[in-house]
Amino acid sequence: MIDRARAVLTGETGFADSRAGQALRRPHNWVQLAKFCVVGGTGYVVNLGVYALLLRGVGVHYLLAAVGSFLVAVTNNYTWNRVWTFRRQRGHVAYQGMRFLVVAVIALAANLAFLKALVSLGVGKILAQAIAIALVTPLNFVGNKLWSFR
Image 1 (cartoon, rainbow, N blue to C red):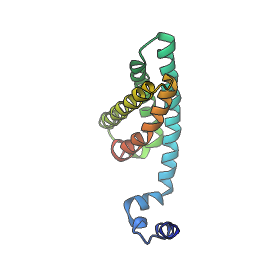
Image 2: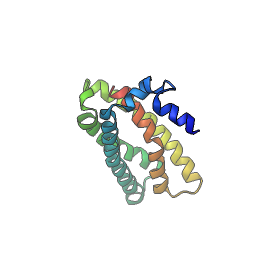
Image 3: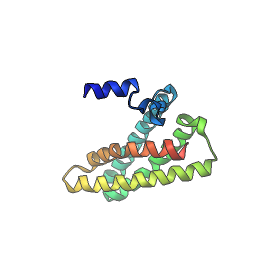
């Protein structure tokens, strides 16, 4: 195992020359990931806040509350990712926005599936939403990095 790790780190596996290996050596990509995480953190707070308000304050069904909170959070995230995280990759706002929406809807579908499964297992609805959001974050980042804002 140590030999394998050494081979990966020294580039003997070919990983260092791969597209992923080259991307990992670019500091800009790490800064971009950090920015995406900050934006995602604000979206996470917005999503959970709106979700809790719709769920407990208004009495909306938990799955419908998840859709409503998604709409608010995705607007927040798209705006901040476009103007801050991926500003060097700005394309046409409508074209990029549609791609972002496609990725977001796929992430929403995965979120709803996780949310429903977690609630059916007895996890509290707000905690289940918090976990579901965290579980779909990698999918969301990869989709936006490689497609929406490429």
